[in-house]
Length: 193
Ligand code: SF4
Ligand code: SF4
Image 1 (cartoon, rainbow, N blue to C red):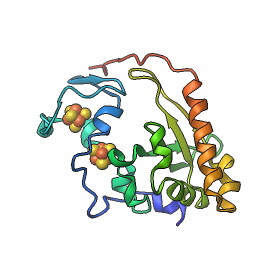
Image 2 (cartoon, protein in one colour):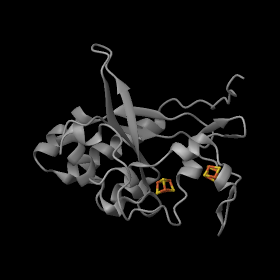
Image 3 (cartoon, rainbow, N blue to C red):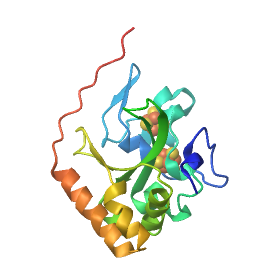
Image 4 (tube, rainbow, N blue to C red):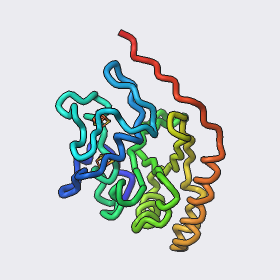
């Protein structure tokens, strides 16, 4: 696998349906005229047993979002977000030196159990081995900003030596560091117009 695996629109992986997963309806920050919700809070339109009650008219943030588990076939099947507590998002970045656009992934470990998720280490290792930028995304408490750090360099030795325990240990430390970092309340600013 190479970084090209992330370029362009990879579409959706056949057979990977959201089903009863609603992780993004809690984890995303939505700041649109019709719906404002900071990360960590369950959307008011998500009702038990019904899913999204405004599905046909849901805001663009919801329409446009598909998580990495749905879009990237090399993300392990076992990492459906509600079953693994791992949320992977595509992460666009622009090189400060060349101005080139590239795609990476942001990996959120929603709680401590995510570190035990089957396929987490293998998925992260595959991305690092392919030089795909990998960011560990650590949300603050509900309503607070997240911290995010690129972990490729920190993980490279563990990937090369195939040391799964070391890789998971580094992710655990990085998550703890991110949780202890600065998180400030998210301020909702409605788009102009
Ligand atoms: S997190 Fe992914 S699988 Fe879960 S509801 Fe959102 S898009 Fe679907
Ligand atoms: S509007 Fe619907 S799809 Fe969007 S976050 Fe709320 S429940 Fe989920």
